[in-house]
Image (cartoon, rainbow, N blue to C red; front, side, top):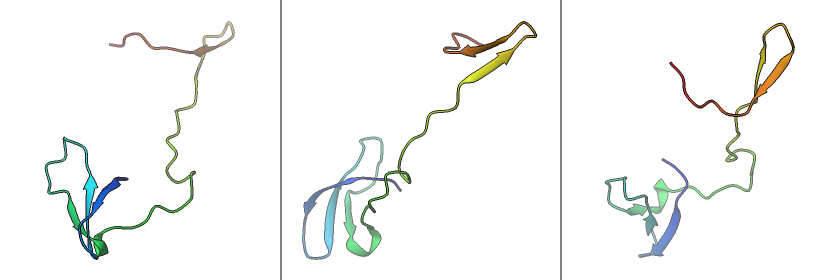
Length: 70
């Protein structure tokens, strides 16, 4: 489902998570439904796309920003 912080431990086996407001589910979960975050920053790292290179025959150009498209 995603990466969420534990807001409160309600009992030995039940935890309340800090969910986004858009998620319309009850925030309490049984411990068997949860998994600890592993210390692997590469797995959860959001990568930006590579730069766009355009070659029009007169040379190559890096595109920094696309303002509009049709």
